[in-house]
Amino acid sequence: MHRSSVSLAGAGDASYDGAVTAPGDDVERRVARLERDVARLREELTVTSSDAGAARALAAGADRDVSEVRAELRAHTSALNALRQTQLKHGEALDRLPESFQHLEGSFQHLEGSFQHLRESFHQQAAETSRGFAMVRSGMAQIVALLATPWPTRTELDAVRR
Image (cartoon, rainbow, N blue to C red; front, side, top):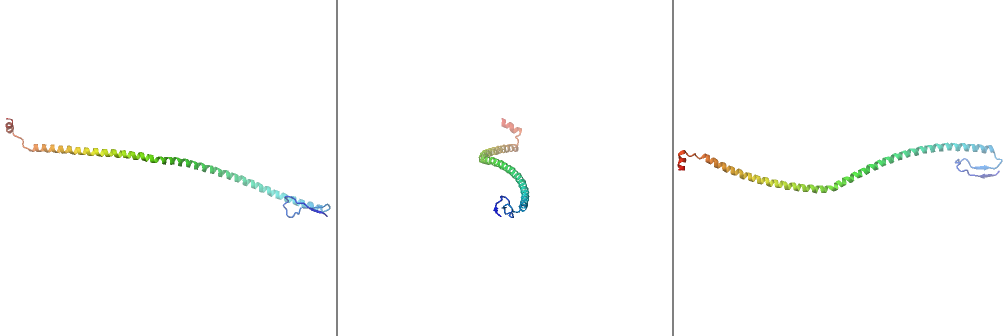
Protein backbone atom coordinates (compact mmCIF):
# COMPACT_ATOMS: atom_id res chain seq x y z
CA MET A 1 0.00 0.00 0.00
CA HIS A 2 1.18 3.35 -0.98
CA ARG A 3 0.36 6.49 1.05
CA SER A 4 1.05 10.02 -0.04
CA SER A 5 0.71 12.89 2.40
CA VAL A 6 -1.47 15.79 1.28
CA SER A 7 -2.05 18.85 3.46
CA LEU A 8 -5.59 20.20 3.50
CA ALA A 9 -5.56 23.97 3.90
CA GLY A 10 -7.95 25.14 6.58
CA ALA A 11 -8.87 21.67 7.80
CA GLY A 12 -8.15 22.83 11.32
CA ASP A 13 -8.52 19.38 12.90
CA ALA A 14 -5.40 18.05 14.57
CA SER A 15 -6.78 14.52 14.48
CA TYR A 16 -6.96 14.52 10.70
CA ASP A 17 -3.60 13.56 9.35
CA GLY A 18 -4.44 14.52 5.81
CA ALA A 19 -3.16 11.26 4.41
CA VAL A 20 -4.70 9.96 1.24
CA THR A 21 -4.45 6.25 0.87
CA ALA A 22 -3.86 4.34 -2.27
CA PRO A 23 -6.61 2.42 -4.00
CA GLY A 24 -7.75 -0.67 -2.17
CA ASP A 25 -7.77 0.90 1.29
CA ASP A 26 -10.94 0.89 3.25
CA VAL A 27 -13.20 3.35 1.42
CA GLU A 28 -15.89 3.26 4.05
CA ARG A 29 -13.45 4.31 6.72
CA ARG A 30 -12.23 7.15 4.53
CA VAL A 31 -15.76 8.33 3.69
CA ALA A 32 -16.75 8.18 7.37
CA ARG A 33 -13.72 10.27 8.25
CA LEU A 34 -14.55 12.78 5.50
CA GLU A 35 -18.16 13.00 6.73
CA ARG A 36 -16.94 13.66 10.27
CA ASP A 37 -14.57 16.32 8.96
CA VAL A 38 -17.34 17.95 6.92
CA ALA A 39 -19.67 17.94 9.97
CA ARG A 40 -16.93 19.43 12.12
CA LEU A 41 -16.23 22.08 9.47
CA ARG A 42 -19.97 22.89 9.28
CA GLU A 43 -20.03 23.37 13.08
CA GLU A 44 -16.98 25.60 12.85
CA LEU A 45 -18.66 27.52 10.02
CA THR A 46 -21.78 28.00 12.18
CA VAL A 47 -19.65 29.23 15.10
CA THR A 48 -17.63 31.43 12.78
CA SER A 49 -20.82 32.85 11.21
CA SER A 50 -22.22 33.49 14.68
CA ASP A 51 -18.95 35.15 15.71
CA ALA A 52 -18.99 37.24 12.52
CA GLY A 53 -22.59 38.34 13.28
CA ALA A 54 -21.61 39.25 16.79
CA ALA A 55 -18.59 41.11 15.45
CA ARG A 56 -20.84 43.01 13.02
CA ALA A 57 -23.23 43.88 15.88
CA LEU A 58 -20.29 45.05 18.01
CA ALA A 59 -18.94 47.05 15.08
CA ALA A 60 -22.34 48.69 14.56
CA GLY A 61 -22.53 49.52 18.29
CA ALA A 62 -19.00 50.87 18.19
CA ASP A 63 -19.92 52.95 15.12
CA ARG A 64 -22.89 54.44 17.02
CA ASP A 65 -20.66 55.11 20.02
CA VAL A 66 -18.07 56.77 17.81
CA SER A 67 -20.81 58.88 16.19
CA GLU A 68 -22.05 59.98 19.62
CA VAL A 69 -18.52 60.80 20.76
CA ARG A 70 -17.94 62.79 17.57
CA ALA A 71 -21.19 64.70 18.09
CA GLU A 72 -20.17 65.50 21.68
CA LEU A 73 -16.72 66.49 20.49
CA ARG A 74 -18.26 68.84 17.90
CA ALA A 75 -20.48 70.34 20.63
CA HIS A 76 -17.48 70.80 22.93
CA THR A 77 -15.46 72.31 20.10
CA SER A 78 -18.32 74.71 19.33
CA ALA A 79 -18.57 75.69 23.00
CA LEU A 80 -14.82 76.25 23.19
CA ASN A 81 -14.92 78.40 20.05
CA ALA A 82 -17.76 80.47 21.52
CA LEU A 83 -15.78 80.83 24.76
CA ARG A 84 -12.74 81.91 22.74
CA GLN A 85 -14.78 84.59 20.96
CA THR A 86 -16.09 85.83 24.30
CA GLN A 87 -12.59 85.93 25.74
CA LEU A 88 -11.33 87.85 22.70
CA LYS A 89 -14.10 90.43 23.15
CA HIS A 90 -13.34 90.70 26.86
CA GLY A 91 -9.64 91.07 26.06
CA GLU A 92 -10.42 93.93 23.68
CA ALA A 93 -12.58 95.58 26.34
CA LEU A 94 -9.80 95.17 28.90
CA ASP A 95 -7.34 96.69 26.42
CA ARG A 96 -9.56 99.79 26.21
CA LEU A 97 -9.74 100.20 30.01
CA PRO A 98 -6.54 102.27 30.34
CA GLU A 99 -7.95 104.78 27.83
CA SER A 100 -11.20 104.91 29.78
CA PHE A 101 -9.33 105.42 33.03
CA GLN A 102 -7.28 108.20 31.49
CA HIS A 103 -10.49 109.86 30.30
CA LEU A 104 -11.98 109.48 33.79
CA GLU A 105 -8.82 110.86 35.35
CA GLY A 106 -9.07 113.91 33.08
CA SER A 107 -12.73 114.34 34.03
CA PHE A 108 -11.89 114.11 37.73
CA GLN A 109 -9.14 116.68 37.34
CA HIS A 110 -11.61 118.97 35.59
CA LEU A 111 -14.10 118.44 38.45
CA GLU A 112 -11.41 119.14 41.02
CA GLY A 113 -10.62 122.41 39.22
CA SER A 114 -14.32 123.31 39.20
CA PHE A 115 -14.66 122.52 42.90
CA GLN A 116 -11.58 124.60 43.64
CA HIS A 117 -13.12 127.51 41.72
CA LEU A 118 -16.39 127.04 43.66
CA ARG A 119 -14.50 127.00 46.95
CA GLU A 120 -12.71 130.22 46.06
CA SER A 121 -15.99 131.83 44.98
CA PHE A 122 -17.64 130.69 48.19
CA HIS A 123 -14.82 132.13 50.29
CA GLN A 124 -15.04 135.42 48.38
CA GLN A 125 -18.81 135.54 48.87
CA ALA A 126 -18.39 134.69 52.54
CA ALA A 127 -15.82 137.50 52.93
CA GLU A 128 -18.09 139.97 51.13
CA THR A 129 -21.04 138.86 53.25
CA SER A 130 -18.96 139.29 56.41
CA ARG A 131 -17.95 142.78 55.30
CA GLY A 132 -21.60 143.58 54.49
CA PHE A 133 -22.77 142.35 57.87
CA ALA A 134 -19.97 144.37 59.51
CA MET A 135 -21.23 147.48 57.72
CA VAL A 136 -24.81 146.67 58.74
CA ARG A 137 -23.66 146.19 62.35
CA SER A 138 -21.86 149.53 62.24
CA GLY A 139 -24.91 151.25 60.76
CA MET A 140 -27.16 149.60 63.35
CA ALA A 141 -24.84 150.77 66.10
CA GLN A 142 -25.06 154.31 64.80
CA ILE A 143 -28.86 154.06 64.63
CA VAL A 144 -29.01 152.72 68.15
CA ALA A 145 -26.70 155.50 69.33
CA LEU A 146 -28.88 158.10 67.64
CA LEU A 147 -31.98 156.56 69.14
CA ALA A 148 -30.37 156.59 72.55
CA THR A 149 -29.65 160.31 72.46
CA PRO A 150 -32.41 162.53 73.76
CA TRP A 151 -34.45 164.44 71.21
CA PRO A 152 -34.02 168.13 71.22
CA THR A 153 -36.91 170.06 72.46
CA ARG A 154 -38.72 172.54 70.30
CA THR A 155 -36.94 175.38 71.88
CA GLU A 156 -33.60 173.85 71.27
CA LEU A 157 -34.51 173.29 67.68
CA ASP A 158 -35.71 176.86 67.29
CA ALA A 159 -32.48 178.08 68.76
CA VAL A 160 -30.44 176.05 66.32
CA ARG A 161 -32.41 177.42 63.40
CA ARG A 162 -31.85 181.00 64.27
